Image (cartoon, rainbow, N blue to C red; front, side, top):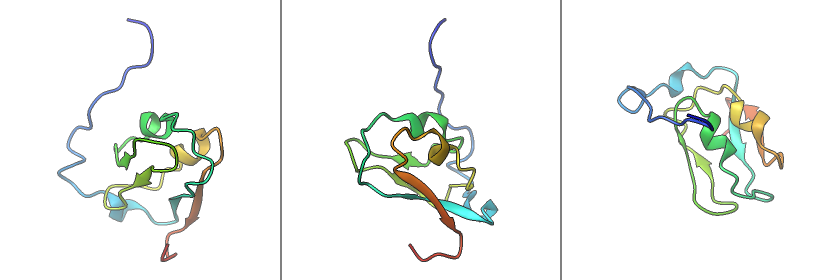
Amino acid sequence: MFGPLTSKPGTSKRNKTGSWRIESKPKFLQKNCIACKMCILVCPEACITGEQKNTYICDYSYCKGCSNCAVICPKQDIEMIPEDSKE
């Protein structure tokens, strides 16, 4: 089979893994998003949702703060902010 493979998360939806995050978390700016869904594809916890441009968000209950989404975003519309930030 050729092309990207995506799979459903294993047990992550049963286990809130957001407490693993210690340094930073993603902030979706929702300004330049083109809805390419690359962030969804690289998220190991499948905690990013959204349908259209500038609608993507992250569920911090499951986000581990790996920064894969921020690194892959072609429009730099996701930034990593300090964990203690109230945003």
